[in-house]
Amino acid sequence: MRAPATPILTKSAPEPPAPRAERPVAIPTWARPAPGTTTGRGQLVLSGISKSFGGTSARALRDVSITCAPGEFVVVVGPSGCGKSTLLNVAAGMITPDSGTVTLDGQTADGPGPDRAMVFQDHGLFPWLTAAQNIEFGLKMAGVPRSEREGRVEDALRLVHLVPKRDKLIHELSGGMKQRVSIARALVMNPAVLLMDEPFAALDAQTRTLLHEQLQELWCQTHKTILFVTHSVGEAVRLADRIIVLHAHPGRIRREVQVSLPHPRNFDSSDINQLVKLVRKEIEDEVNRVNAEMAETYWKPQSPADLGADSGLMGDGI
Ligand SMILES: Nc1ncnc2c1ncn2[C@@H]1O[C@H](COP(=O)(O)OP(=O)(O)O)[C@@H](O)[C@H]1O
Ligand SMILES: [Mg+2]
Image (tube, rainbow, N blue to C red; front, side, top):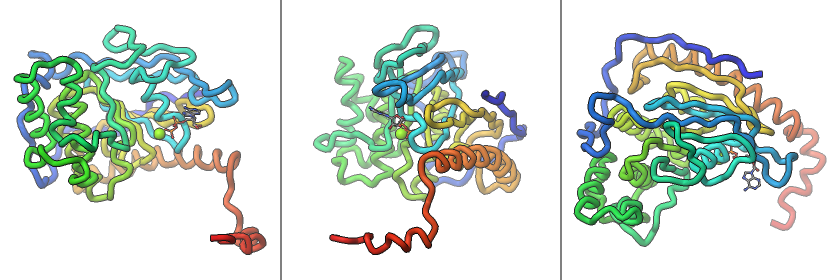
């Protein structure tokens, strides 16, 4: 039984933004919300999604329903194997669910489309193309004329602060830069929704922090709806308007938490830090419980004494 969304304390006065290495850039016209609105399109509704791989015994998701309001930043957090990627792939139209529906702004979205762009942990960029060419690729495929493509690619490079790297091949970029190219490649299509599958999981802590700041900045400017999955509680608290905790085998919603802290979140502020600790504790307890249950069922570390009995086998033949 799913617990209702828990509201967490709200802080009314926004904190001054944290100092950043690079300043935000003006959002280009094509990426702005419709005039007179801060948001507009981007209501993503996943309704009663269930999915099995190879029979009901391998059920990845069971009856998962999530509604993302236009411009909302929703983070799904859960242990490895709980169905996070499957859920995002269903939202992207790349996996057909056994039951349930996906709609975007009231329209059925049962296949891939440029209105939902995906950013992966493994950036998936073409190594034989430059940063700019990778960003341009989707526009080319969509038949956008060259004159318009050039301007949009430059804008997208500016949004992720990578103009000087436009002609670099992918292997010439750092891990963080690759992810920024992949975010720019998604943004340049001006999707209504960004779907992000653990995009920063493989990065070092410092780069991850910088990208958290940049993503918050981009989100504050573009008001895109973002559905982001991670196994990191800290990342979820840092980014989310709302956190959804998934339970595994089969993946189902265990808990929702509303995080009404101002964006961008300044983690140097002691007030915010205190609130973040509260939220973090709530989620961590839940995630720890889920992890403990899974360990109970599937795997339990052996005691040193047990390991000792077999330790002669370890390393044999290496
Ligand atoms: N294509 C597939 N074929 C068979 N099983 C799959 C496939 N994709 C995912 N699964 C299984 O579904 C469950 C959820 O996987 P996944 O969505 O990748 O989890 P997560 O992203 O949370 O780690 C796992 O048990 C995984 O082994
Ligand atoms: Mg995954």
